[in-house]
Length: 339
Image 1 (cartoon, rainbow, N blue to C red):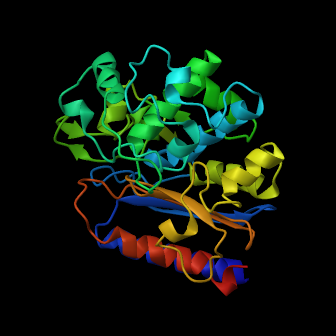
Image 2: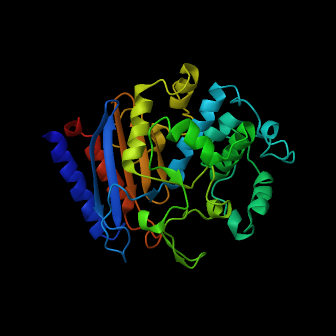
């Protein structure tokens, strides 16, 4: 069968990447609005632990957390708890009147708020309350231009908590994980024996396995709007299947999520930002990557979703050619043979 042939080639590509030292283990899955079509795993949970990666092992999803948190927030927009044009300061009423407080939820969701990019607040603020105080006072550029901002998604997570009176992990479970049957996906920490290792972290002084890789998220207790989730490719495929079917959000909110009117999807990167996708992916495709080596792509025109999870930051975050592997896997999964 063609699906089996393509899946075998994906396995070969991922095995080659593992031999090249780009990660110790990886998992993949793809499918459509009808469900899962192919899945598999290669490699081991760490360079020092030869235990093979199985369907039970959890990968640190890193920034693939963001679109899931966005979905939870959008579900609460549908219920009237929040508005997309609402300013952060209207929700987080204890924040000072700073540029961060004057950003609005829609621009934070689309990375057009002007909020700063990578900001290692953890280095000078090793405690949660101190880090959040520093977050509230960050400088912000004029809105409009796209600039990827984890700081904005930390803020979105806080806004969702404040508006609903729920912890973010409970809110995400209620609005996204449970309705989609994502029984393996959760915020950490998770038992190390269930987790695939990430970085031998200089800041922490040990190999991270079972706790969040992102240092800002670690200071925040592992539960944040920008990172912190652990999960499996099969679980993310369940979510992708439901989103491709439609109806998970109210019609106007769902249209905005896909970016159908302005090309700026809510919680996702637009097709042009997903530079690892082949020409066979449509212009309507959206996706998101995670720093640890994770990604999820949904293409409503092709009726195709693709998930790739790897620990490309193990044992270090030094570049080792992982982008070549990611591009090869997506070229195969979106090729004409794959369906």
